[in-house]
Image (cartoon, rainbow, N blue to C red; front, side, top):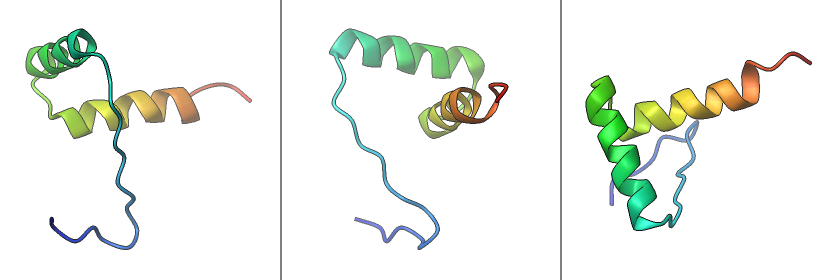
Amino acid sequence: MPKIPDDLKRLCADIPEQMYKDFAKKCIEEGISKRELVMKILEKELYSKEK
């Protein structure tokens, strides 16, 4: 397994098969990697809300 840079942390989750298929389909539709879509969702959820 490749070494992860010190400033990054690995995220792993077991999700239902259909959800994974829908997630992969959305990545294809948007032309982005799974990593990019997860980052986009997390950034939107964590950082774009008014505080």
